[in-house]
Length: 456
Ligand SMILES: Cc1ncc(COP(=O)(O)O)c(C=O)c1O
Image 1: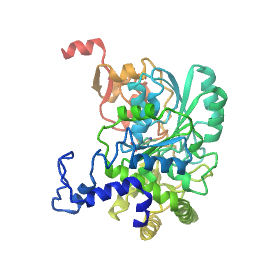
Image 2: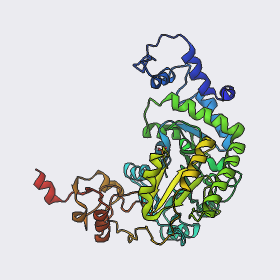
Image 3: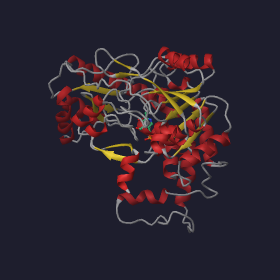
Image 4: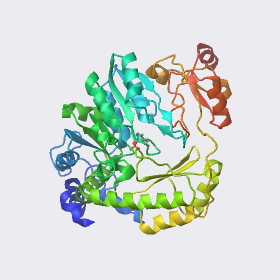
């Protein structure tokens, strides 16, 4: 796809610099030296911040141009580039609310919990429900958030993950309306849904996270972008320099230019062909889902489900199904709550999609009988996320953790696919038992005075 080179300024700058027979007396230390092996060919594109490559946190050249093209594409107030993944963007977006109260969808990624700890955010959690047919987790509704806002009138923002790991999206438009009514900032972690913007089926529907004031796209998950490439979109007026400072504080001051170039190139591809590529791919995946359903498989379904995410139920046979797929060199994204989850994009080869279909059809469909959800009661909070995160800690076996305060985020790929505990919450007996049954291993809890004395 060399065609897009002219539309991708960062990509062009990096490849032009690599093509020069230049003498490098700057970082990186490898000096583009090509060791033997395919892997090392990437080294010559591993440039750093010099005048011809621009600076990520005060851009005036190709990065400024790349961001401006992204801003135009996403029709945002400004779109910032990240080579530190969505994790960097989540932290930067939440830094604005240091010391303030934020209402979080309970299904947060670790980076959001870390931001709450780093920035001393007073975190309130809203839990979603489970789908009645599949038991899969559904994000909270605007009404759930409204109740939380009424109970917490001093909150300044709502942070929502949509779509979630199973591709189930929230009604973002209604959450936006609530936020406008209550004068709150709506931050959407759209890490799993960057492509929603390019699918006819999801674009401009109420499930599109771009209704939020601040949107985080882990672009590398579903766009043709190298791991680490992400966008932070502001759909409201904001100080560009303030956001850049927060991005800088949350990431490395030596961002990877190969990732930035790939993000820029991926953006150029999507600007030109995204709608066609992703909409065509949606049709292919819809066909695959239909075939599987016709053969009796339970495939997560519904208008609020990512058309490109394939979640197939295997119940107790999930682990063996995953092993069998791996023997056939097929690797799903994850296995959770009885479902195998596959991320499909227009960049999957047709032959690979055919192989997936053929291999899945060799299994016997499994009827859903078991609710794999861990029905854990809502934990009680004893310390703030920050206090617990930075407290002295000790590692204890699950059964010894009952009644103790969690010092870390406890989560596994298991619905509600939300952390079972976040720092500062009390680990209940039922959670301790569940962790024991699931062989969770040792759990970090806040150390009490006695254990600290014992350690001395
Ligand atoms: C919901 C959610 N948010 C944020 C992230 C962080 O994304 P990245 O890997 O791009 O840092 C992830 C990663 O899996 C995620 O699932």
